[in-house]
Image (tube, rainbow, N blue to C red; front, side, top):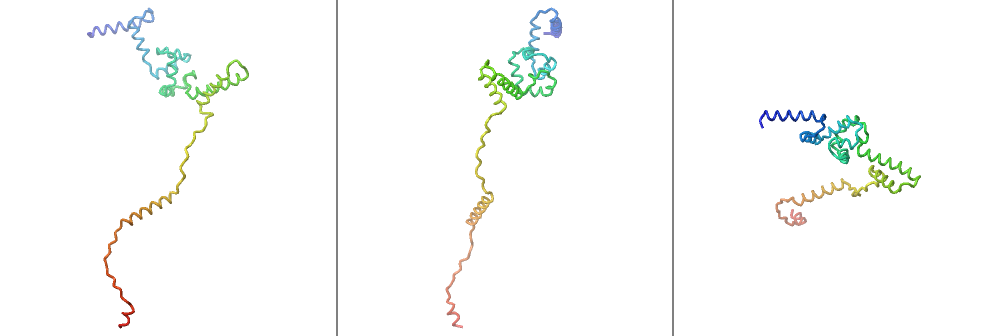
Length: 199
């Protein structure tokens, strides 16, 4: 393709993009452009969308990026997204979008307790369902759990005794390695009483 053909193609593409909202027809070029825009997801773009559109539901936020509503839960649970959101968390109006996992489980536990209290006074809902929801929330918060067993520590040893034992063992080993150099001297038995009589 020559430079003139490329320039002409770009002009046609720009004109189709500008005309797209007016004529309502979706040409293949416009569809390709829309597909590229949908595929350009970043955590920063999601945070900006949440701030700019405080009334968007989870479904609308996901649809903006061409994704299903269930995808939004994975995004919100992502540690990378939560870190990106931290800088602008205070600007997002919907608390269901900014809640951390701990806050969500805490809300679940609190709501379960309230529902349990209400349901204990009536018989419309099986108590098992409410009890199970409360159990999940409480476990998620780490409440009602047994303390982990700590392994038994070995009996303390007196470090000064073990040092003394090691020192004595080292001294014994050193003494065994020593060689004694001595001259052999002949000792003659002399009777002391005979030597003094002769004087």
